[in-house]
Amino acid sequence: MQHPNTASPSGNAVSADNRHQTGSDDTGVDAGHNQNHHRGKAERDEWLFAPDLPIGNNPLFEWPLNARRILTYYRDYWLTVSEVSIFFVLAVAGWFALRGVLEGAAVLSAGWVLAVWALNLAVVLVFAGGFHLFFYQLRAQGTDLKYVPQFGHRGGSRFTFGSQVRDNMFWSLASGVSVWTGYLVFLLWAHAQGWTPAITVTAQPVTFIVVALFTGPWIAFHFYWGHRFLHVGPLYRHVHSLHHRNVNIGPWSGISMHPIEHVIYFSSMLIHLVVPSHPVLIMFHGYMLSLSAIFGHTGFHEMMIGNRARVAVGHFHHQLHHRYFECNYGSVDFPLDVWFGTFHDGTPEARRRLKSRLGPRWQR
Image (tube, rainbow, N blue to C red; front, side):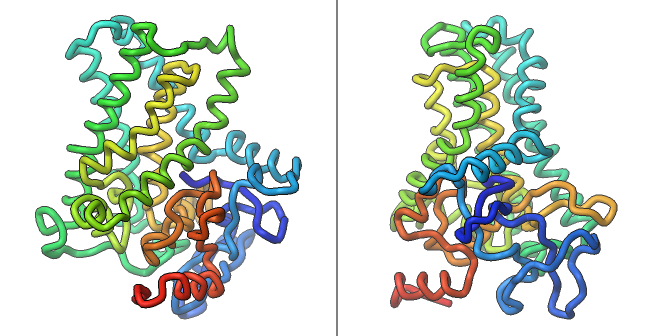
C-alpha cells in the first residue's frame, strides 16, 4: 500500500510519491493544467510523468525521529481524502450494512457468507470498474498525470481469453474476491465464536486507534516478504508471472493474481487472530489490501476533476517495480526495501545501482 505523504531523503516533508506534482509529455505541454501544480522531474525517455524525485518512505522508521514529519505523514494519511480515509469510511459503512446479517455469524450459513461476498464483489466492481471507465474507456483525463503513454495491452496470447481486461477481471473477481471473502468470513466467524481477542470502540478506543494506525505498516511488512518469495524461480514462473503479464498496468491489474498468490497476499489478515480487533478493523484490513492495489495500478498519479488533481491514486513506488522487476517489493509504509538494498527511488542513480546489483541479469 502507498501512503499520501512521507519524507524525502533530504528531510523535507513531501509526498511519498510527491503527489502534489503534475507532469509534462514529450511535446512540453503540461500534463495537468492546474496552475497550483508544477511539472514532475521525469527523465523524458523514462516516464510520461513522474513525481519529484527521489521518492521517500515512512518517516516513522527514520533516525533521528522527526516528530513534525511523522505527524504530517499520519495527518495526511487519515485526515485528508486519501486511500486510507476512504477505506476506513467504507469499512465502517460496510460493518453497519452487514451488522444485521452478521448477528448470526457464529454459525456458518450461506446467507451471511453470500452477503459478505456480494459486498466485496460490489466494491471491486465500483472501484476497478469505475477507474477503468474513467481513465481508460472515457479517457476523461487523457494522459494528464499518467506515468506511461500506453493504455494497456490490446490483446495477445499472454492473456486468458486473449484480452488484458477480460484476463484481469476474471482473476480479480473469480479468484481475488473469493479468496479475500474466504479470509474475511473465517475471521468474522472466529470473532463471533470468541476465539479472537475482541475489542469495542467505546471500551478500548486507544487500542482500536493503535491497531488501525499500524495496519498499513503491517501490510507493508507482510507484503514485502510474500512478494520476494513469489519472485523465487518456480513460484515466479508458475504463479506470480500471471500478475506480471501486466507490463502496462490498469485498475483491473491490481488484484489480478494466481489463486496461490491471492492466498499468500490476503494472509496478512490472519494477524487479527492474535491482535485485539473489531469487525471494522478486519474489514478495513481487507479494503487496504484489495482496494489499495486497485488504486495503485491505475497508472495515473492522481485523479483530476475539473482540471484539478483531487485524489492521489497511483503508486509510483510500485510502478517502478513493474518496470524494473527486481526492486520495490514492498511499499513506502515499511522501508524493508531500503534496509535490504532493493529500494529504487526513481532517480537515474538508483537505476545505475540496480544495474550494478543485477549484473548480467540486467535487461534494460
